[in-house]
Amino acid sequence: MRSARQSRPVRRRKVVMALEMSLLCLPSAHAASGILTVGEGTTAKQYSASALLRRPDVTRLDLSRSGEPLGASVPAVPLPHLVASSDQGLSFAATDNFVARIPPDVFSRARRDGTSAWIAIEEQPWPRRDGQDIGPFALVWTGPGAEKIDREQWVDHLAAITPGRDAKLPAATGSVARRGRDVFTISCLPCHRVSGAGYGTRGPDLGGPLPVSRRLTKERFDRTVRHPEQVRPDAVMKGFTAEQIPDADLDAIRVWLGQVGPATTSVTQPSQNR
Ligand code: HEC
Image 1 (cartoon, rainbow, N blue to C red):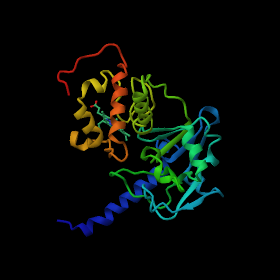
Image 2: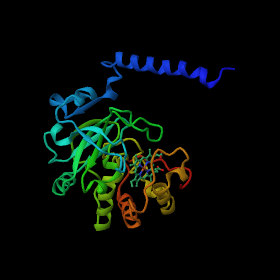
Image 3: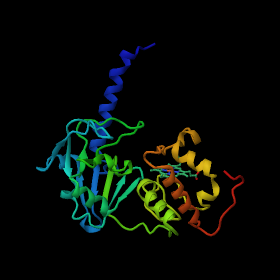
Image 4: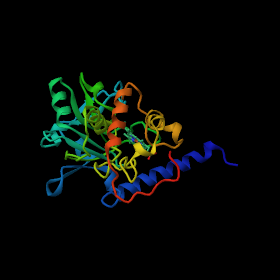
């Protein structure tokens, strides 16, 4: 039997070889994960990590105490230096189909209170999160208001930044439902569409084929949002605490989802109610 110590150097060599291979393959399909695209259509610009690291406006950030610790000296470029304008809001798409649409008022509030958005670049390996690589680019925030920026607005393994378009979500009737739709837009829309509207496809469409509010009891819905791992041991979704989304806001989301119609008209009845 081979001891662990004997087998380790062999494994390490394989890793180095795999890295060299992926560098050789860079201009091909692999490039997608190592390139940041900014803008749309013919004016879109593409950046590699090494190109961004060579820029004169690279600044070192101490992100060791932030909610999303990446290190004490992380190179980053100010977001406003890369995008023409954030007046219409911006969409940040990650490699895993997570799409955070950050509305203009988040940027204007940040400007007022001295909070800055940055594109952080992985130079020293970043810690893995849930066994996943989170580089080579991430949207991060610094300054007095950084802690108030929602978790869904710190974007790991960022792949593309585009002008924010309105997701054209289904209507909300009444102030509670409107509140629910607003909270949903920040915290849930990055992963979930509703009746076909939205950009994120990481999680299922909560509007259809059969609206989630009609399929799940209140108790089941609440548990899915608060403790997804209790509903499915392999859950991708991370639970939201009452501090992140107070009970009243969670109820408001349910009220709004109760008003939306299915994405399609042909609905097959599930065999059981939950
Ligand atoms: C990081 C991505 C992500 C975010 C953010 C997210 N979800 Fe999810 N959600 C998922 C995924 C993926 C699933 C499918 C089950 C799983 O793997 O966790 C899911 C499943 C669900 C389900 C169960 C759907 C069904 O058909 O049974 C509900 C309800 C739900 N999410 C509600 C929400 C609400 C409400 C929010 C915002 C407060 C939210 N989710 C935020 C990824 C996300």
